[in-house]
Length: 125
Image (cartoon, rainbow, N blue to C red; front, side, top):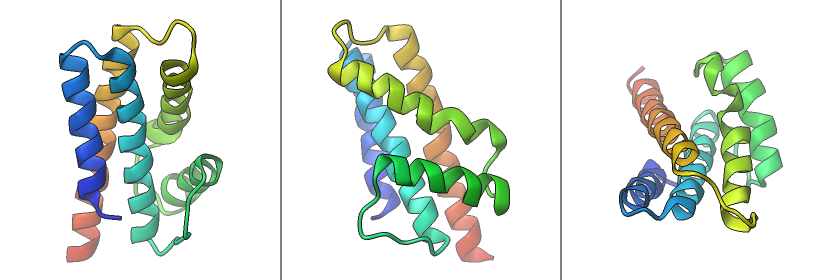
């Protein structure tokens, strides 16, 4: 998978939020982070034919934040929080608020942008 896939999901989340499609924006923000995390793990040689949500979450933090220190500690809870919001957006009776979704979209922007930077830096290094 290429970073362009995560970037596309991120753009979709921004567009959905702008159009008031709050639940769709929250869902796309999570998948932007999920895809970026997958790409980050694969860039470090941690390959799987398919990543489960649990498997990806349980690999990203220990491997890329704690052990290799490629990403800031603040990212520890981003994936888990975004998954919870995505589940509420996709399956919850009430969906999610615009405020919560806007926060998730901002987090996704930071997450995808930093993964992109780290991968570029690692390729140059």
